[in-house]
Length: 130
Image 1 (cartoon, rainbow, N blue to C red):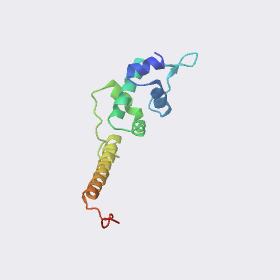
Image 2 (cartoon, one colour):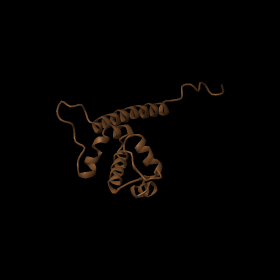
Image 3 (cartoon, rainbow, N blue to C red):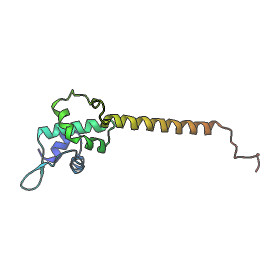
Image 4 (cartoon, one colour):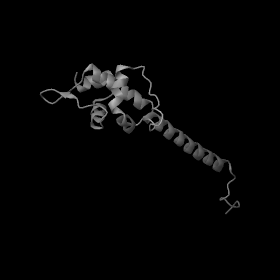
């Protein structure tokens, strides 16, 4: 199927499919003799996995880092994104969770600081009438 039909079937846009290909999330699409991209059902399954990973909070760079393993999720949709073997570097998912935890901590501190500022008596206003 052509790019517009493939995008609609996967719940995205042709522009997103071109972007996924440019960023290395999708292998280059097969082309017709006129240069139009053509996608098979397997490609649609991969696009759906990519979209699911992105919707879970992984970044495009995260997904690109493990793009060589996306087909494992295509062939086994119940597969879990497990932790790496003991002694191995942390996986992409663990790194993203750590980054999200750090951002939550930063935002919570920022929120608390702002709330203290709002609750504090106005010091800069000075005496009335000035």
